[in-house]
Structure formats: C-alpha cells, structure tokens
Length: 80
Image (cartoon, rainbow, N blue to C red; front, side, top):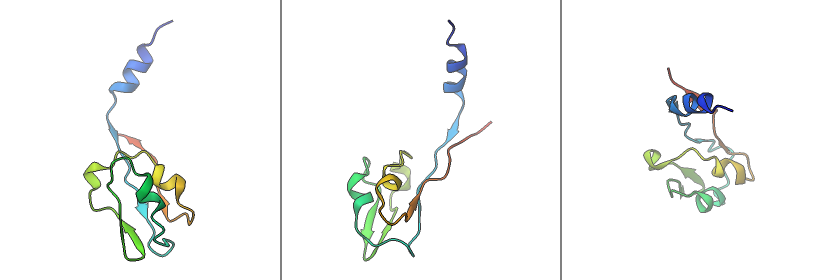
C-alpha cells in the first residue's frame, strides 16, 4: 500500500478560513472566546470580534459552540 497520494495532498498549500462573525446574531455570551485555543477572539460590549486574525488556526471551535449561530467558518480552500 502506497501513501504517495497522502504526501501530495499534504504538500498542497491551503488557505485557512477566518471565522465570520454576525454581530446581529451575537449575544455576547463569550462561549466562543472561552473555547478558542489561540485566544484570538474578544468580547466587546455585546458582540465578539477578531482582534488577532493572524493567531487564528481555523479550527472551528468558536462556530461549534455558538448557541446563536453567530459564528460561521467558511470552507477551507486549496491554492494552486
């Protein structure tokens, strides 16, 4: 069994997706901030924002825990 296909797939450059925050839906509960492994999200008043986008690893934890569906993570794309 060969792993050549996996090696090629891992070598392809990818463009990480940053979370898209919907301030109309956000309740400011802070669940997304609490679960973020890189601390790149912050609560400001009643909404969440992304002050450190370069720290985001695109894991999607913020979107997964948001009870208001105010955080969305667009699909990851490959660049050629």
